[in-house]
Image (tube, rainbow, N blue to C red):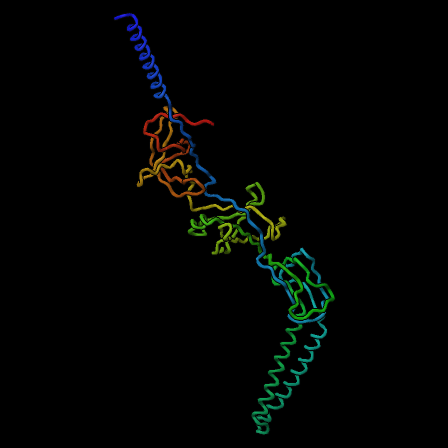
Length: 352
């Protein structure tokens, strides 16, 4: 073999050895490359069954009050923004003409009664015909009704609060002359306050029994400021814009709290029937086995992952409620779970 050929073969062998060494290096590097996984630490969430909403305070009802008779307003002792207890005077009309009507009705009734009493013996003697006696009885009955009507109209000259009334607006002024039915005051029924919240359709679907939920209004960051609410009603027609249902609760007027219709408050709901279970992201749930859900648990000591069966309850807000199979402190893989194998060594993701 001449020298040029030997040199060529030597060069080829050197190249092959170099390529083989590079291949072994790449192979070793690939063998040592670990799958990076994102971990989620499981913890018992004490707020898992608690929700917060923005509530709006409202009155039970808003009505315009009016006299049932006409006349001149002589008393209007209320101010806008004032709460008048039930039964207290709101306004009054001049009662003079109505008192005279009562007196006139009393006189007419007395006369009708005398006529009827004088006619009774005449009827027994056959002097007075039955039809004439019936007419006198009718006159007496009509006089009784007229007196009752006059007394009622006299009572209608006073307008009293039908409930604990918040005066929102005076619609007329004192000394005005009004007819029957003319609105005098606009008031709101604040014998209790109503608190309205808008509940998403997903949560409404989960409600089986209203008694399972405790609802509070929170007036400050201090938990001592929680005041219980009582369920009253809920809308069955969804808001077409927000896809929510309005739920209304009752709240008593609180001493020292100037809560007025239109104000907003924080409403907290707690599901007393639900257990305090673990929550994991939906992405951590391995659904490759239809009859059994799994998660991949990461062991920090060995850096290995293992497949763990779990029992789940429900999904809400991109989280799965776990009934069993996990404990607080467990670390589960929350991304890339379908590329893992039991006992595989992985590297936790730290940051981008």
